[in-house]
Length: 377
Image (cartoon, rainbow, N blue to C red):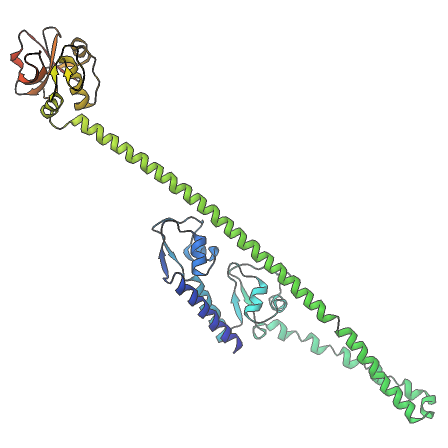
């Protein structure tokens, strides 16, 4: 009954912890979560969470689903073992013989004897005998009962020293009584002397074993915490690396989109008119308000295709590829490369012609002289 009450209390305590922290059997990992933090919140250990969820490492990522009810399952298993009287226990990660002994209210030395253990080193997953009822070795080996060492050696009781000595028989009865009464006093003194040193020795052994078990448990917890902190540092590093890669990818996509937008430029005619807007013709000009023919062509090609052209019309013609089927966005050159305009289709162009004609749209045939050809870039 005592073990059953302890099992119920254990289950109640574990259930209370789960309800105050993370009550769901499955939990979706959020930003900043770690196995160590989830283990603390759910009242379990990092190794238990890894075993329940089949994790080979300590890293978890946002969006992962983690099983958190490992401690409740463990508590239920303990309760079943105690109530059915099975007398066995499956070792969990982090268990020690001392803690298992406390859980089942037995001395851990008895557990070692029942399981033929030569040391207190145990391994997770192994089944231990934790009750005398489940230990056939003790029942089948009645060495203590069959050894009648005390009964067969009644040296003090059977010794006829008093009877064989006639001197004692001739003495008074009072002396005989004194001799008989003095004998058990010596026996009791010997027994007391033998029994007294055993109690502190056993106590010292238990205290040493408990201290060793607590030290191993502390070392294990420290190792788990260090591993969790290392995993968290690696996870943060990976998150930062992913963020940097994502920012670089977004920047590259933005640049590509901007380049694509410049290269397509929408409609060649609209780009040409946009570049021409607000500008006047000034020989040698190349600014936001004043351009000559080659400067206008240079600004158009930069906005339309993102390409840089030479400064003069003759050099621009040399840098292009002459085509026989002109398309909007090609450049048209006149009179041996002395003038250039932006062809926008249907025999029309936008150019910076002269101070009187200014910058605007006009027919290709409007320019006096000869057409050298259409060039593409």
